[in-house]
Amino acid sequence: MLPTIFLFAYIFSLTIFVDTKRTQGILSSKKDFVYLDRFCFQSETGTLEYSFKYPLFYPTQMLLLYYDTEDQWPKAYKQLTTCKDRVQLLTNRSENNQIIKLSPFQTDFAGNGRCKIYQDNLDADWVLCMGTRIFKSARSRWWFLAVANCDPEEEEEKLTMSNESFGVYAEFSLQMTNGLVTEIFKHQFSIDEWLILPSDGTFLFLNVILVVATYIIGIKLSSRRLYHSTYRMCAQSITMNTAGLGFLVTNYIFYAMDGVGLPVVKAAGLIIRALADMIFVYVCLAIARGLNVSKMRLGLMDRVFLFLMILFFVSSYLLMEFWEIKYFDPALVYAQSESLPGYLLALWRLVAWLFFLISALLSRKAHEAKKAFFTYLVILMTPWFWAPPIFVLVANFALNNWVRAEVVNIVENVVSFYGYCVFLYLSRPTQGNTNFPFHIRTTQIDVDVGFDPHTAYGVTTTSNINDGLHGIPMELTSEAVLSRLANRFDDEDKGIPERPQIS
Image (cartoon, rainbow, N blue to C red):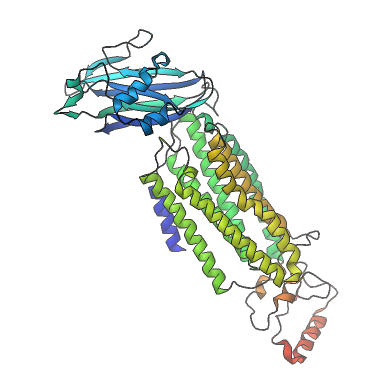
């Protein structure tokens, strides 16, 4: 467990995806065309406020605005190779005002100057440009921002130094918003993220109710000595998932106020939820193999396979983080699920379901008394395994990219909540639950010699003194119990009896 903790601590330290839309920094590159940022603007209310500063001796920098159709950004970024061709693509659509020249010697389309020259403390001349742009289009769409220094109207001598391009240098600040300032759930968010904060807040409330229900059921199981390791791990998973949601909601509340949020808190929330999901998958696989239901402990092959499954999950998650740092190109990829590690995680879930199905069918065949339980387990949990991989394909190939993030977030929350509800429903210790999985007390879990799971875990009957759900019937006195145990000692082939549980 300790190496896993260090592993995820390492992931946490490397997690850098910050989708803040109030950004500032220094853009420096030897290239003359550089991708800067992206945002999904709502038509008519989408607003970009920008500030750029660069040395006066540099060629005129240009802020280029591309939208998401195939003949715009994909063509400019993937097909065209020269800076001038990429600028020319927008020059042909000059009526859209998608080229913003950051020059103190030119005015904008409204005739207003947007740039000025000033001197810093070292008497160096700088160009400072500030402005606002409102986006109007037929629908909400993604806009991609890039900076270039290949102004076709500029002299060739100024564009190069020693026959090499100056490249791009700009100290910038951007704020991209949608809607009115009073619309707290919309103003700072990209269009595809509008429903994330409301949906996460709703499911945080529902998960808190789940935590309370888990605690109540746990108390009842504990009082009857039925609080097994599988239920405890499920309770831990629910608690971790709720904590992770709390972290995410906290981040988005701050994000709604300042457009920056708490990136480290968000990263922690995502990692905690991933761990919670991994623990719950382990619980499902262990239950399917009959742990605490039809056997006391898992066999060697079961433990090896579960270890390999967890290792594969951790490796895929780690690969996804490194992939994002090294190869994830936000200019082309909208979400992590579109990358190779995202597909690996979907494949991992399907492999886990296959093992889950085979294990449950084998356990169902070997233990007739638990036949109904394993049947319901497979039927109710199969949608939980299959929904995320299917929806990854639906989201990547069927959903519009301006609604993808919020819909995926809602589906993930629904699937997670559904899985926990199913487990708690099957584990509820009530008279009406004929499929209750646990019929052995935790104090008897270490009895190996002479232990018969077919009877120890059998369905409750009035004659079963090892009835874990309702305890020993009141009409059975301690003398009657000891008499039954004495009769067992008389049978040579019965082995060592179970410990008497007298209340």
